[in-house]
Length: 314
Image (tube, rainbow, N blue to C red; front, side):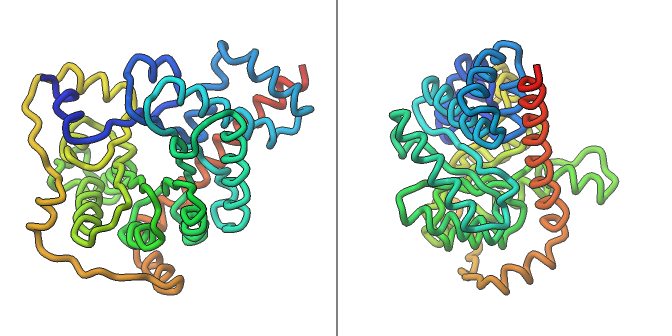
């Protein structure tokens, strides 16, 4: 068996792309998107007709058009996968709990009207305190959430406490930060702060019986992916999935609930808003990467808005 086939026996593989052709070819269980991926997909020449039609239907209201296109891409993806799709709330709302809830409810209503079962949709938002609190409420309404841009243990603890369905810790971006800080070109998985962060989160969740799933994200190499074999889910870019498919190596399991129970016990904690904020102030990785991640998603959305404005002006 290839490395990918072995990995599939212990971990749910998710496609980290909005490219429908790639999803159809790779046949992942789930797919996850973000504004950058959706923008990349929608500005493809093949999608210009859909863009123009949606612009016309919404009289050029860019926010309404982007929301409609987001749902359309989600529905197109769900036609190709047997599992779930993650649909991201506008990153400009990352620090506004009520606005995030309202946007999520609007998305779920649109999916329902399109005939999509709510169990097949994850609403994705940044793991700010406000985003986590929005997810806490949405989960009580039967709406599943994926908390993204997760870099610190305090974020993971608060997400589990809020009962969110899934978290997406960003392995690669943490490694990028580590390389810059330590002025290193190569960091083995055993010293990789991103890999080690996910292992700690997974261990904490399994030791304390949390149902929140851990989905490693933002990978830079197959080495990082294989170091997390056994994680609940791994969302992987198509080029790395292709690399794994031709690797002829043994893939030992690195994570499992029973392995976590055999490791040193971790104390269970619950964080107030003040304690969460204090932990954030002490976490230089999250302080650096979370705002940049939110700004990056906003930038991708702005790029799509410019594309739509150009179409409207034609």
